[in-house]
Image (cartoon, rainbow, N blue to C red):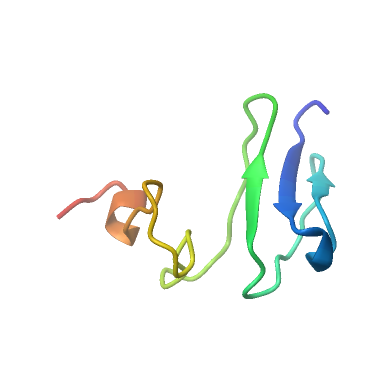
Amino acid sequence: MTGAVRIGRAEADGGPVSLYPGEFFVVPRGIRHNTTATEETWIALIETTTTQHTGSEQTALTRSIAEQLGSTS
């Protein structure tokens, strides 16, 4: 899967989706998902700045918008 990214979703939400260069996928609001790739893969994410990347869950992976943008002030 050269240059591919996998969007993991629960089977009840349609299961995983594999994307290849030039493809896109819209994850519906509220659907729990994650992304993985077997090699370095560049992707573009389009979302509002109010989107919390871990949803309402707070985990060790949760980062503020400022942290995601590289500005911690």
